[in-house]
Image (spheres, rainbow, N blue to C red):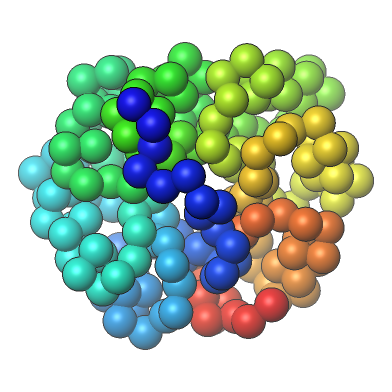
Length: 192
């Protein structure tokens, strides 16, 4: 099965609100022009309602596999998220990329770039698993390293984690990343 949408998923609004609290979610849905919301709250019981609310505001939902309480980090947990209407699942487990894509969602493979070995391993996983998008963390890694990863990966790059200023986001966009995820509400309506 192919993903829901084969178009470039992050081409119009490059800032993705990363929400951890309901108050933030309400703001992200109603007060931002964001196309996507990175959902980092909820549990197995509330996920269907949260996804429904976000979709009613015309936004897509990106869920980190490890952020929703009570959902297994396996094929059945991924299928449950698909059944709830999640548009994209972020996983740190490379083998899960296949299951996410088979479930019809965008597959985002995330990894922490902490040293050269992590970078080599992450690139190998990207080439082998072919996710729809890659999330590099923290977003503040050196720009030259982002350029190198971007040149080897054939998928869009999102930077996430520790992105707290407009200057950081502008710098990321200037080197060609597809989007930046941030929990800083002041940046959610940033035009780049």
